[in-house]
Structures are given as C-alpha cells and as structure tokens.
Image (cartoon, rainbow, N blue to C red):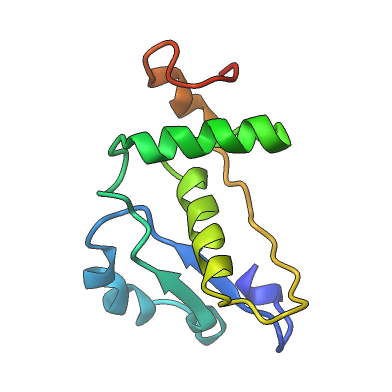
Length: 121
C-alpha cells in the first residue's frame, strides 16, 4: 500500500503490540525510503497483543449490528477504534476518503467464550 500511494495520500498503521514504538526506529532503518512515509500509531494497542478488553467486544458487536462487518479482537477492531477516534478528533481533512484495510484474523474469534460476540464466528 505504501509503495503505491500517491503524494497526497497517507498510510497510517495501527500497532497492536504494546512496546512496538521502542523497536520502531530499528525497523525503520531496514526498510525502503518510501515505506518511511507510513505513520505508525502506537496508542491503540489496548493493553497489547491479544489482550481481551470488553471495549473491543462491545465495539465488534456494535459494528456488526450496524454494518454486518465482522471484526476480530486482535487486529481489526483496534484499527476501527483508531479510525473512529481520529475522526472524532478531526484528524482527517474534510472531504477525505478513508480506507480501512481489514487484515483478517477472524479465526481468532473462535477462541472467545460462546456468547461473547453477537454474530457467528
């Protein structure tokens, strides 16, 4: 995505790993310059990788009810919450087209106790 973006476009990545910001600089030294344009957000890990939080499950149920869009609790719900939060902060310029890439991970929902989600896994 970053290698294909146009000059006016932004690529924003949401880290689900707590502490990734500490190794981010090391990673950046090993990637092509065009990938350096990725803006990493480290504040939306919600406790870290695969850490269950009720907010995540509530959001997943709300999004499914409203859009029939299943999210997973490890990756995509965190990206969804980041986009919602950034929109509330008016981070995106008026008239922006925001694309959230659903990266999969739905199989992880099978690990949740029955009844956690209001939609089929």
